[in-house]
Image (cartoon, rainbow over all chains, first blue to last red):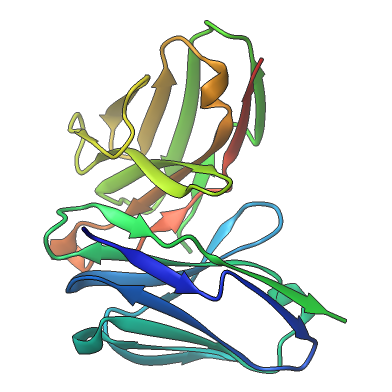
Length: 110
Length: 115
């Protein structure tokens, strides 16, 4: 069936370190987004990236649609980067249905 | 800036009560969504709407209904609240695909407790 898998499930970093989060998906996609959920529960849009590469400050993302994965890079991590990172995918066959991965919980230590 | 607002951040209701959760967006988006988020289960789609008075069931519609009388407002209704509906409820909106849509924007969430 349609699946969205994120790895790692949990990640602990020292402030200043870099990291890569991965999202694998099982079918071709219309839409892929990366979100950061802060400790208060707000989901914040990071990237809309069904294919290609985008950068926004210390964050960048790459989606290789043909190989069915997306990567989120966090460089020079800060304590404010802590939270849960979600990949959300709308598949070609799914109508308007968006499927969220289980998330990567990131904790950045000072 | 897209703004999606939800009527309450925290809500406590009793079993059997009728509960209304309201969501308003100010960016003329066609699509609106209701999700619930539970530990270990992630975000699951309850209902979505792609136009006024239109609605489609998501993955877990049982025990819920929705109303979309105006384009900017999407309401989630718990007809008779039960303890297993204690959860975080998140509303989102997006443009229609033909208008360059897909990207979803979320409200701050409503943490509902049913006792």
